[in-house]
Length: 339
Image (cartoon, rainbow, N blue to C red; front, side):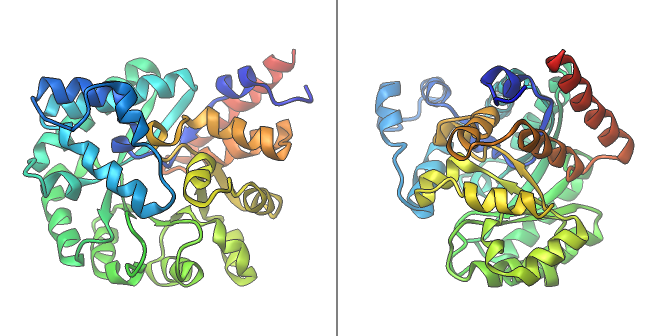
């Protein structure tokens, strides 16, 4: 097989390591929950909601993103949101998910920690029936004080077994990784896996990536394609086999570029970079759509696509035995597909 087809990509076993559950809130569900919870979101049709999904920067996206969360009120709402995403994951043959959620975005609007964590975790458990292995990554909002992150970490102690790792997201400007050195140190001491966003083309991108890698010692970098600007950091990532999670469709919305050139440059250098969907309800596509956008615009080979999928499992936070099972699934899929 020479051509990367839609059928091939959708059927390919893959892991998703960079998806925000709140970013999977489709307009249909947003309107349904608004009506159920009697919340005035200022729109009465799905079309009107879709018109607001028009951004030209990270900050303009975040304004729409956070305002939409107001419809999430009950444990059932959070469960429903997550299960709708896991159904999409099954359609894309996502076998393993490590999904982000944003506690502070809900706590600041009066939602109890138990409400969202129990809803999300129950959905993760039920996702097994869809043949999707789902886990949660708790993100700190970097435009909030570090003390708030510490408070969230304290709340999470009562739910430790439900949370696989911690991350850092939201507006990166004036919010470097070092700001969160203390809460991340605490998280590592408590046994959490760690990752941080290094969004594309931000102010001080390279310095932030350097802090995340050399001082915080994260296990993955989310986005992070600006690393190509620094050969020394590329060498470090290659040496440590640390994973990068690229999200082409969201890159296009925020920077007018899929960053395919940088993604393929990193892949060619044997960097463990994977393809993910980020906030698919807001950026127009789930994980397979991100693969296909790269394939269409940068002439990906089947070998490239396979390598991205294998990297997604190799850089996931699962056991070596589990990784080998999924990697063998990819090999079997390729063999059977070609046959």
